[in-house]
Image (spheres, rainbow, N blue to C red):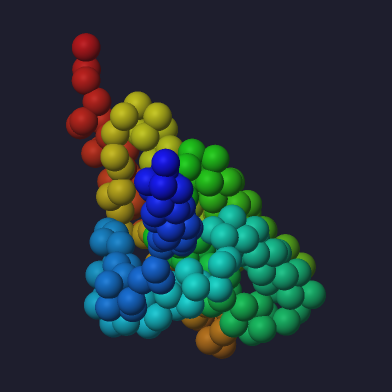
Amino acid sequence: MRQRPRQAQRAGDRAPRSREGAAREPDPKIRELPGPRKQKGIIAPLFRVIFAWPYRVVLAGLYRSGVRPWHLTVLSLAVNTVCGWLIVVGHVFLGGILLLPAGLLDIFDGALARQRHEESRAGAFLDSVVDRASDAIVFGAIFWMLAGQGKENQAALALASLFVSLMVSYLRAQAEALGLTLSEGLMQRLERYVLLVIGLTVPGALLPVLIVLTALGTVTVLQRLVTAWGRLPKA
């Protein structure tokens, strides 16, 4: 008769410890966190090497702060919207500077989702929609500004840059819908952000940047078309 209470007490002592151990995973150490993902593009390999440790530090801070991935995604859209408004009203330099945090938010929402094991189709869908909306806002604002200044040729290049950037993303989405992985191309999202920051903050750089964005974006579209066509079954 005395053994039952002791067994119940021992089981009761073990239960809280097991629940406490499963309640929260320990915060990862910075050196244990992954660096930037391997991506194709002109700047991505250099970014992966130079910013490996700053990337881990920021990711660790976001993880420990309790921020959710979708918070970063929505905040990225908000910052891009402010950038577009600043460009339209003539504060081009400030709009270009704000593209830096907007780009970082776009990088870290996916990284934080992977670290928290919260990757989902809904999150990927939201991220994709926000990315396309952000591109449309920023390039649309540049077009509006240039058209208002009477620079029709440059305004046309802004629209061309937007078109090819949307085509690059569209081809990838269509390939993934068919079960293909399509990440080829010189001009990825990271490269677009970096070039836009340069074009908006360096005097006289916007026209060359728009030319490069349009040209390399077109090359990327062709690269993905050829790659996808080669991988798809012909029968």
